[in-house]
Every structure is written in structure tokens, then in C-alpha cells.
Length: 270
Length: 116
Image (tube, rainbow over all chains, first blue to last red; front, side):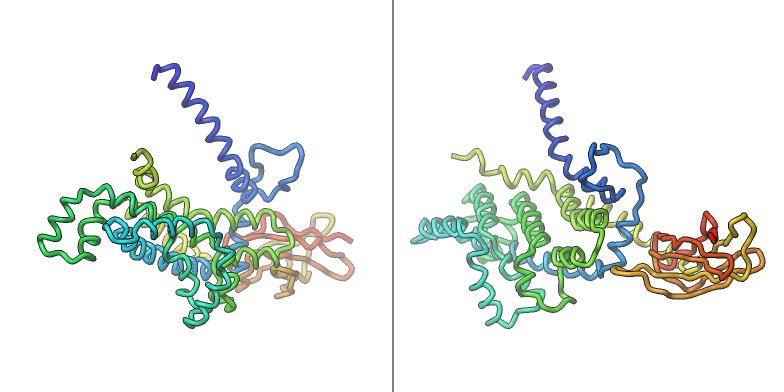
């Protein structure tokens, strides 16, 4: 690509990126000023910045407890996704009768929205005695089809000779996954960690249904409770949103490169 | 390695903030009350109101000294209001104040001014 053309492309991408970031900037600005978001003409630059809306969020609601619950549930979800999805994906890389049907079944299941399966999921969780528990909160997200295919794509790229050599050396199948496949699939691991973390962190509907005990509420539920109490919600609400967003953004920035690798590793195959 | 750096920095920041808070959270609020003509208002009752999620709740009262100064201690509220009042001298507007953390020691920059 010629330098002038490259500069033009980069300039256009910068403008588009800036436009995409405007809502985030507005949320941050409002959280620091509390100004009316419907103000006209809008003030592009923040005036009279102060952190008191963050202080309000910290003290008016049990924010630390919400964070702790969200972290516990997200940790269970991430570990569950790594374990179950890697096992499922490895099974799909091994030839067996009906493999194609299983893949088709999984793909078709992706078309069913979670809202449609929420009642059976609730009944199963109840039968297991996991209502009002962290594990019950995490259960439906402990395996996701998207991440199974992320792992499968990555596992498919591992040379068969390597797996055969491991088998000849006497490694059990689960140890092949642990010691051969996963170390060679760090992008898929990073993608699964980020996706499952973000899905769990932002999950609202399932915790709303499963949790009755206020002690177990997660951040999104805390946000809705907070909204129902506060009279003037603008600044504090946006401060709450920023505080909820930060862990996910930090995790993404830490694993950005591997995350993008993981999502694009199978994109050019075939 | 970057996880260590990020988490280490976050832990150091949290530890530093907590240490600072622990050393400055006696809940002391100091201020002055002036009469309408600018002279110190002695013997005035100052009321401390805590701002909760839904209302203002009265928490404590203090009286000003001969120089119009008053002080509250052990008041943790991070969002509160003060009002000075004295029969014959009038009352100040109920003014809201904020602190960066609960119990932060605070000296009011502006005095409370009584209005008839």
C-alpha cells in the first residue's frame, strides 16, 4: 500500500474509531460532571469535574459485595468454560460416528435465544438445589457453543502427528488436552476467558430470576436496585456504569492481541 | 508479567488510598458562622444532617464559640448538610457538602452566614 493511501486509510479508521468511542466518552464525562445529558447545545468538554458520584456509588450501595459476587460467578463461569468447552471441542476434533450431526445440532442450538430456554434452565437449577447460590448463577453460562467452536478451530490447527506422538508416549486423552492442546491454543483460551467473563459480568436476566437473597446480587442487579432508589440518577448512574465496565475493559486490554488472534485464527481457512 | 504489573499497581493504589483514609477519617467537620454584618456569631446552634439515598436525616448539633467557630467529630457521612440557627439572629441556608470518603476531616472553606 502506498504511503498516501495508507495515511488516508488510517485517518478514516481513526475517525470511525473516535466516533465509536463517543458514547463511552459521554458516559465518562457525565459521570464526572453530572450534567444533564439532554442539555442543548451539548457541552463537548467537561466542566467542573469532580469524583463525588463515584463516592456516592461506593457508599450508598454495597458495591464491594456486588463486585465480590460478580467476581466469584465470573471466575466459576471462566473455569467452567475452559474445562467443558475444551473437552467438547477436543471430542469434536476426533473422528466418531455422528460427529457431523453433533456439530449441526450445536450450530442449530445457537439459533435458540436464552430467553426461550430460561424456564427449563430455572427448573433444572431448582432440581439441583442451586437456586440462590453462586454456582446456580454461573451454571447456564458454564459452557457456550461459540467458545466450543473457538476451541475446535484452534485444536484443528494442531498437527495430528503431535497428538499421535503423545498417545504413543502413553498420555491419557485428558492429559493430551491439558499438556498438548491447551498450551498450543493460547489465543483460544484468551478468547474464551474474555468472552465468558464479559457475558457473565453483564448477565442480568438470569441472576434476576435465580437470586432472591440480596446478599448474592451481582453488579447488574445492583445497578437496577440503585436506579430504583436514586432520585437524581444521571451522574451516579453513569459513575456506576464506568465502575462496572472497568474490569472488563482492563481484561480486554491485557489480552487484546490474543483475543483478536483467537477470533480470527480460523477465519481464512478453507 | 503485565498481569503482575497491573494487579500490583492496583493493589498499591488501593493500599495507599486505604492508608490515607485510615489516617484522616476522624469525622471532624470544622467551620465558622458569621452574622449578616460579618461579625462572628457566638452561641449559635449548628445542625448536621446526613444525606441518605432518599432524605436528609438529623445526626448531631453543635454550638459555636465566642469566635463563631464550631466543630463536629465522629460524623462519618460523606454527603451531608449544615445549617446554623439562632433565635433573633436568623438561620443560614441548609447547605450540602460532600467528602471524598466517609469520615474525612474537613474544614469548610466558606463560613455559614445567618440571614434574618
